[in-house]
Amino acid sequence: MRTSPSIVPGLDRDVYLVLDDFGRMGCAWRETNVEDTDLEAVIQDLLEGQHSNPVRVVGFNVSEGWVRDVSGEIARMLRQHCADKNHELPDSLHQLVEQAAGQAK
Image (cartoon, rainbow, N blue to C red; front, top):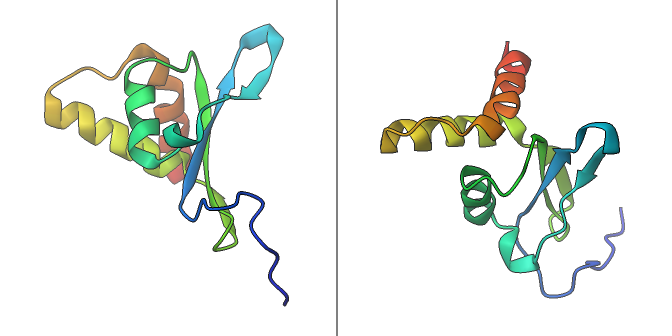
């Protein structure tokens, strides 16, 4: 199979985007700066409540040619981070974490 050049020149890393549910207005992929699409930045944004009702997180790497739903992995990381810091999971993350837990069964 012939590989195509990256549509994101110079960005040879994993990228993470959050799908947010805005209720009656529908769902949308949140607009974000390129610098804020790495795993650590997305986790931090979620914990800080930057997303009102996240329902899915998708990770991809155009250079490597993969994309997948990483919501379950993100949910586990969020739970672990809160447990390590002895913090409650923010209310905005309950649906994402519960949905990921249901899919893992």
